[in-house]
Length: 433
Ligand SMILES: [Zn+2]
Image (tube, rainbow, N blue to C red; front, side, top):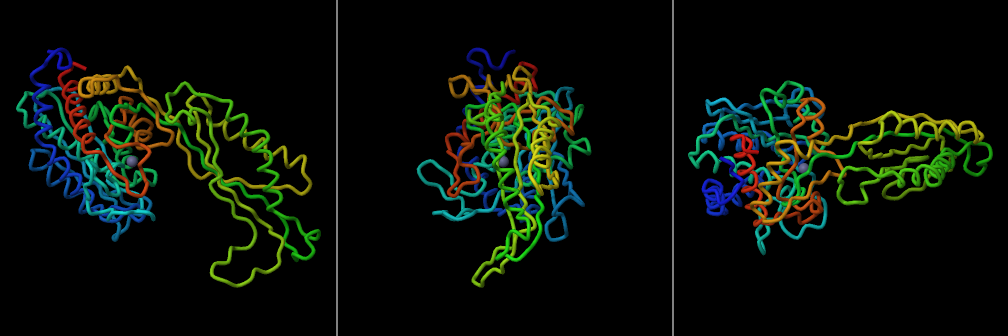
C-alpha cells in the first residue's frame, strides 16, 4: 500500500486524530515552555528531560537518560541530561528518529509577554522556545503518539530524543550521543529534526563555519607621543582595509548551488564578531590612561559553502595577513582558530527528504521547498560523527522568529507539522516512502 497515493484511509485517519488533539499539542508545547531551559548556563535540563521521558514511558517507550559528563558546562548544578526514548514494534524494519533540542537562548529585552508562561493570542503561542524549538518537539511527540494509538501494525522502531546544548554547539547533546553510537546505523536510519525552518520547507543541510581570532601586535608608549610606540589598532585597521578591498568582494562573488535561505546567504560571508583594542573599556565613569595600544583582537565568523575547501578558506585569510607582514612596516599578528564545522547537505532524493516533502504536499496541498540553513544545527553531528546521512530538519516554527523577543509559533502550523511528521514516519516505516 502506498500511504501517500490517493485517498488513503489511514493517512486521513491520522490527520483527523491530530486535528482532534490540537489542544493536546498546544498544552504539551506550553508544558515544555514552562521549563526555563536557558543555555547558557543550562538551566532546568533535568526536569524537562524527565518530563518528556515520563510521558513517553507511558506510551511504551524504553527511556534512557544520558548525562554528557565532562562536556562544557556540565557540573552538579547544571548537569547535561539528554533523554532518548525508543519503541520497537517487534517486527524488523527501519528506525525513524525525531530529535529536538530542549535548550533555549536567553530571553533578552523587548518581551511584551512572560516568556515562560505559554501565552496564547490570535492563534499564536508565545514563549522563549515556542518557535526554536519546543513547538516542533511537541508536534513530533504527538505525531508519534497518534501513529502508535492508530493501532496500525508498524514495522521497525520509533525514537524521540530531547537533547541539550544545541544553542552552544551541541557538544553536551547530539555530539556526545553521536560519539557513542546513538545516532548511527543500524540503531537509527532516518532522522527528522523539527527545527523552525517553516512548515512548508524541508531543510537538507547547512553552510559551514570557521571562527578565528586575529590579534595584531603593537608597542605600548605614552599617548602624547604615539610616534614612540606602535599602534596595534592601526595595524588592525590595515587588516580591515584588506578585508574590504580584497576579501569581501571575492566572497560576495562566490555562489553556492545549495538552496540556502535567505538567498543572501548563498554567497560566502564573513562577519566581524568583535574587535577589542587597547586598554580595557571603562564602565561607569573614570578616565582612561594615555597609552598606545599594544594589542588588538578581532573575532571573525566565516560561513563556508559546500563547494569551498575549508583549508582553502583559512589559507585565504592567512595569505592576506602574510601580505601585510611583507608590505606594512611593523606589522605582526597571531591567529587562533576557535571553532569549525564543515558544510553538510543530505540528498534531497533520500528517503527522509522525499517522504517529508510528499507529506507536506499531502497536508498543505502545495509543493515543499527544499532549503539549506544559513547557520548550523545538530545535523552536523549526525552527519559527521554519527555517519548518518539521511537526516533533515523539518518543523513548524518561522525561521525569522528564532531567538527574537515575543517569539511565537502558529498553532495551525503546530498541527500541520504534526500531520506531516506522522505521515512521513508512517511512510518511512512502512516502506512506502
Ligand atoms: Zn534550534
